[in-house]
Length: 396
Image (cartoon, rainbow, N blue to C red; front, side, top):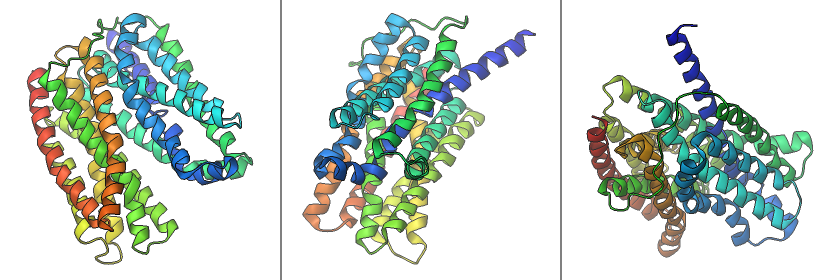
């Protein structure tokens, strides 16, 4: 085998392993909402207690992100990624035990695995594929989003087809996690280039790191706020529950397109992500503004606005990950930079749905909510462009 063929084979193996992890970063979360009413009825859970099942993994994604860098420094990135997807599988499997402690404990375990794996993945891409950061980030982000969509869309049909209890159905997501664990276990035993030494300390004094954290946080705040209230707002305006589900399906499915396409386009046009950030955040902001001022203009308006927001959100997420990864001056610092961004960013994002709901209660309607989110979209654009400018300098 020639040296070029060997490098191509090595690249393919790493790409398959990375995509296998990405496919497991959302289904354990997105499969919960379709079953939450059945679970709440089975165990007599309050609305707040049931809602915590969705909130807990998001909080874990922030709280446990700092653990990724020191673990990687101590044990190596491949070993830690293998362990983290194993923890996701263990958490998913634990939910098959039909008790409330197993339900919540398994959800927290899955959230911890998602936090560590999601934080390390951008750093692994930079370390192992330094000349393909944009395209590979786009590919794994698209798989991540698609995994979330599949988790939400298939969980109830699978439960009915296999005649499972709600918790038994949630445990099905242990299967792809175990597959990813085996892939990474093999990868950890495969000789290859050593990973750069990983910095375990957060770059608290770095202005660039703070900008990246704010960019990720604002992007995630917009996403989770829209996810929580887009369908609810239209249902309140008279749309059927089924229509609301289709609306969310469009919102999530369109994200895959730009998550995959925009980093690849940026790579092909010289690597400057700033024009594509303008496009992605601009689409999100315009869509949110149109929901605020013209939610029901014509029969197809809701679907078009949801598609615009989704196209913007998908591209913004993948470009944000590219920017945060490039902000680190050295590959060995990438895990610390992404860990700080995930820690601060997801804690900020967790406030979004709550604040949006409070604004809805205060004003009595959803127009001010989406108008405010559109305004935050403008702020996100400014932060993103400044972050990308600094990342561009580090890239040189």
